[in-house]
Image (tube, rainbow, N blue to C red; front, side):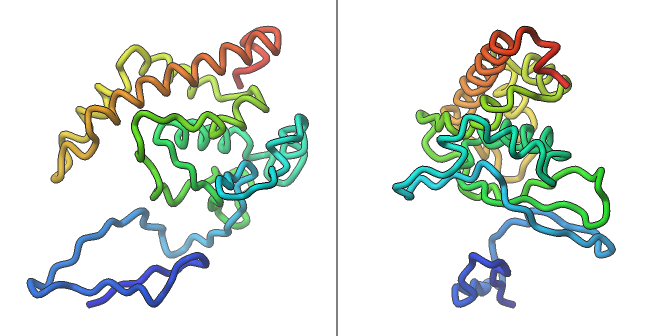
Length: 204
C-alpha cells in the first residue's frame, strides 16, 4: 500500500510505500466527518520569510481593521487563537485554514502544523503580528495562558505527552521554550492593555 499527499502544494511524485515488514510510519492530522463540506481561506497574516519585499500586514498599521470588516472578520478571534497556537509551537508556515461551508458561526479550523518545534532557542516574534495589531483576544484564551504561565505549560505538555507511544515527543529545550513563549504572549497582551486603555478593551 502506498500513500501520497493530496494538496495544492504537494508533489504527488513523492510516494511513500511500505517497507519489507509491510509497515509504514506516518501521522493522521485530522479526520473530518464525510457530511461536512469544508472550504479553504488564506490566513491574513501569512509569513514569507524568503520574500524580499514586505507583505501588506508588515507595513500597514491598519491591516487588522481591514481584516475586521472583511468576510474573515467574523472569525477574527479564531485567527487570534490560531496565532497563539502558532507562536507557542513556532509554526512559521501558516498559509491557510478551513471552515465549514454554509455555517457562518462555525469556527476556523487550523490545519498543517508541520513546520513546528524547530530551533527551541529562537522565537519568531512576528508570528504574534495579529495579536499586536488587533489587540483583541478571547478572555478564555487569556485566562488559560495565565493559568499555564510560570512553568505550567511545559508541565501540562509533559504530562499529556507522557501518554504517547513515542514519548517524550518534545525535548526539554522545546518544553522550556513553550514556557518562555507564554511569557512573551502575556507581555504582548499587557502592552495591548496599556495601549487600549485597559483589559476591558482587549478581552472579548
